Image (cartoon, rainbow over all chains, first blue to last red):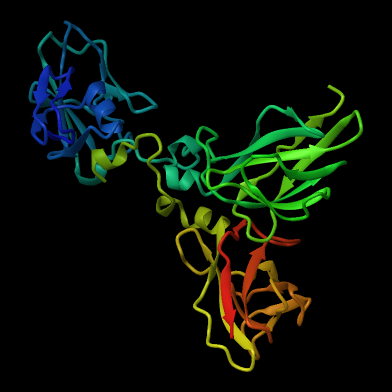
Length: 258
Length: 137
C-alpha cells in the first residue's frame, strides 16, 4: 500500500483513483499511477510506500502486458503472484526499462484477475537518479545561480556611439541572474562607458577599450561604445578580480556600419 | 529510499545534493576574520572551499589585488606561497594543499583596504565574488 498525503491547502484530485484528498489529508492506494506521479513530481503530494507490494487488475481476458506501477528493479528480489499463486520465473518477463510486465501467451488470465507484485525490503527504489542524467533543468534555483552566462540585448544608437544591454542569466538560461557581478570588458576599438541613464557602473577604465565594470543588482549593464569608424567593434567580457562564476564565451558585435 | 524521495521534480536538485566530485569542481573563495592591526599590518586567511563549504584538498593559484596604498605578503611562516608580486598590491599566490593562504596586508595610512581575489593563469573554476575589507587606523 502507498499513503498519499495532500500537501496543498486545497482539495487534491487524483483522477486515476477517482478520489479527492482534503487539504493535509491522506489516502491509501494499492498502486501508483501517472496522476499520482505527476502530483508528486509537482510537489502537490507526498508518496510513502507502506508495504512493498502492489496489485494490478487485469482489464481484459488473456491480457499479457501490464504497465508496472513503478520502475521494476529487474535484478532485485521480486515475485509475481496471480490470484494467490506465485508464478514461475519463466512465466513472465520484465522489459529492459523495468516498466512493463509481460506474461507468457499461455497464461490463463481473465478480466478482473489480480496480479500482486511483491518486492522485498530494499528492492523498492522507484526511479533513483542515475549517473549522467541530471540536466541543468533539474538543478534548483540556488544551484542554477552558481554558474551564470552572458546574454546581449539588441544594439541601439546613442549620441556618439552604440549601446547594448548585457544581462546575466543563470545556468539554465531561462532566468536572470540577480548578481552585481564584477567583470572585465574589452573592446576591439573605440572606448567603453555606461550608456547615459543606463544600469551598471564602470569601476575602472571608463573611456578606454579595457574596463572593469559592475552590473546592477539585477545583473544588467548598459555598455556603450564610442567609435568614429564604420565597421564592427567586437566586445568581449571576461572574469577578473571579484568575479563570480560566469561563462563569458558569448561576445557581442557593435556594428557601426549598419 | 521512499518512492517520494525517488521522484524528483524539475529544479529540485540543490547544491548540497551534488556529488562530492562535482561540488569540488566549482570552488569558492572564503575570507576569514581579519586579525587586529599591529605595526600597520593585518592578517587575514583566504580559504578555498568547495560548493558545500568543505575545504579543498588541492593547491589553488589566484591573483590578489588590494586597494589604496597597501601592499601584500605572506604571513611569516604562514600557509601558501607567493609566486609573484610580494610586497606589492598585485600578487599571484598559490594556496597550501588544503586551499589555505595566510595573507598579510600592510598600510601606513588611515584607510580601508579592499582585497579581491580573482582567477588567473592556472586557476580552476572559482567564485571570487567575496571580498574582504580591512580598516587601518
